[in-house]
Amino acid sequence: MLNPDRVDLVRRRLGLTKIGFAQKLGIDRKVLHRFEIGVADLPRSALKTLCETSQYPEAFFSKDAFEYPNPTGVSFRSLRSLTAGARDAAIAAGALAFELDDWISERYTLPEHSLIQTDSRSPIESAAHLRAHWGIGERPIGNVINLLEARGVRVFSLVEETRHLDAYSMWRNDKPYIFLNTLKTTEHGRFDAAHELGHLVMHRHGGASHKSAEHEANTFASAFLMPAADLKAEVGWIRSFNDIIEKKRRWGVSAAALNYALHKIGRVGDWNYRSYYIELGKLGRGVEPNPLPPETSQIWTKILTDLWRQGIPLSGLATQLNIPERELSSLLFGIASAVRRQSDPISLRVV
Ligand SMILES: [Zn+2]
Image 1 (cartoon, rainbow, N blue to C red):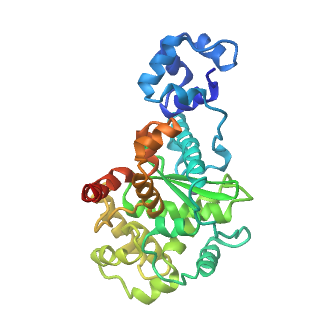
Image 2: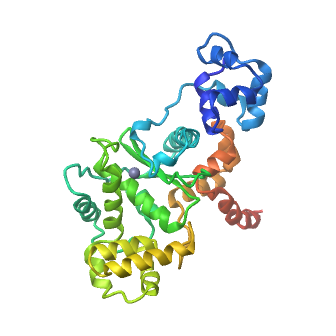
Image 3: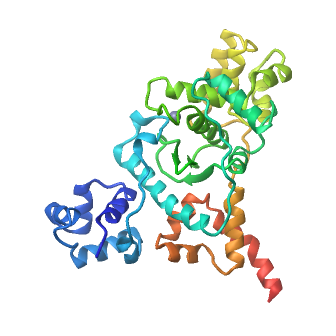
């Protein structure tokens, strides 16, 4: 017996409307509807087409109920420009991540979260409070993903081909989750991760749907990555655009984010702020000067390496979960291929 919810999950992963999905499967929309409400099973030929186009094995569609991320707890940076299909596809990836995370949590002990709730504080106070709680003072943050993981946040990657989707986050069973679109610059990704961290600590109870939530999360991210005291101590007066490009490396932020933060604290005047902003615009969308190398997950690397040593490569994990390897790889920063490269010489030596 097929589970209609799982068929619908894969429809969402494919980014298709119900009508488009029925067409893809070569069936009438009414036939799909009867299957969805549990009146009739999916025609055999449609199931075959579904497995072929989606690369999901048939076993996936007969598994039990699953947990679907709650969209009200999901925040997108630019929800308005995002199409419903792209949004659904990204949220559906979260449901797969939950299954993967549960499988891993049964076998490995991952750090408990040490996030606090700062609901009544301002974003800048919240960032300072969290830094103090974590004992990181005002130091720059080397690797944001690794810091979050060490503090108990589950960080998954999204490889969604829409520039409108940056990231989303949520609480689930008292566990914080962040999903990051990795088709962005490293600086952009670090800022997004800090933005979502802001939602997790400031908006857990009140929700992130109110008008000021996005602005609050951005202010939090800026203060979290670039504490004002450290900016003031490290930066005198900025004299040229090149100063910005050189200095940004310390905090691992985009030149645009540093320009904005320095303007806020008065280290860059109004006229220069605007002219640097224009200079940056000339570089083109998604182009970051003096870029940082990519960040990746340390926890998933360790776990995938350990599983590999136990004889469970990603393809084996995919078989156990009945989820295509490509989907798992997208959620796990594409780490598996790196693990394989590193592990090959070791296994050869053993032989
Ligand atoms: Zn947001």
